[in-house]
Length: 188
Length: 188
DNA sequence: TCTTTGGTGTGAGGTAGATCACACTATTCG
DNA sequence: CGAATAGTGTGATCTACCTCACACCAAAGA
Image (tube, rainbow over all chains, first blue to last red; front, side, top):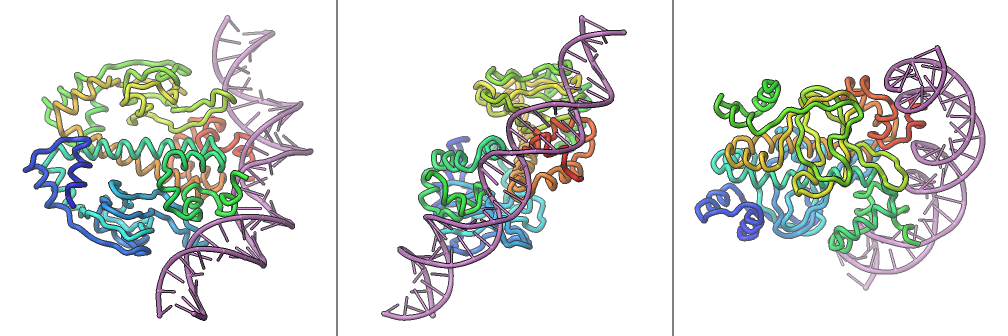
């Protein structure tokens, strides 16, 4: 169960057995059902999540129109959360919802802080992860500015073919920032 | 000259005099003129830049249409770069151009690596910085999905009034992902 | 000083994509 | 099994924004 986490970390930063034992004890394991909210817009965010199985979305719901805007999907081996709210102990702007039954390793902010303080190596790991996330967000911004719906859809299919297969088009549309009708009409 | 850098780092991570001396010696100082390219699309990226004075943009130019898409502005006390290219020693996808005469502290990748290895504290500092950058990019993505041109312009004015004053509207339009004509017609 | 370059406003017309509306087919679940 | 719910396709409008075109003014450089 924790071996996935260890392999994930060691792709970036090798650890001794004692070091990983120290890492491991800060996490707890949790299961979630499809449709379950792991984080709820407007509530506090107890944990940061590392996914072992399943599929989740990070979504902003406009309180007036009820329209959904998907910021990110996550699956096994990915981290996902409303980091802003988690890290500043404020109320979540987004919800994190299971699109399939999901299993995750959970890290509270106190445990995160203790982990960083007790094992500086782990800062290196998270720096790499967050940097990759930042660069990917930057690419997405550029893609939203330079490309039309059709091109963005094709880019998504090319970059994440597995996501595109597991997800209904409605969800893909909410991620691409396009109406589901428009997505349905593409590649005619 | 380096005191700006020290204050900037110590907002997040206090340093002893020896530690800062170690930090300082990895940077070099450089001046740039308005219109000068600090990073050129298609070339390698020698340095990461911490700005002391001036104003820069990080811009992608479509090779076919010559249209500009601005990913970020930076001014004193900000970091800016094509990090992807810098960090992977690949050719830049973006240019970084001075919009005013600019002074910067420059950090080569080798120096960056040496700095991280020699002073683990600095990983903590960069993790905080990159996290803030990631969250800001995420907010921008959401704003592009939920808001129209008018609203995005107002958000920019509210969040960065100083930027809006120093920059011509053409540049703001290229940042907002709107044509300059549309921006000119807003708030009528 | 005169000429170039940069910045801005505004009209006219075109279009990608939103919205609304309805129909049809899978799935899920009591 | 039968009923609700989720997912998809498609037509008919509507609109925010783009593109092209031209005119004007300010600043900069030779």
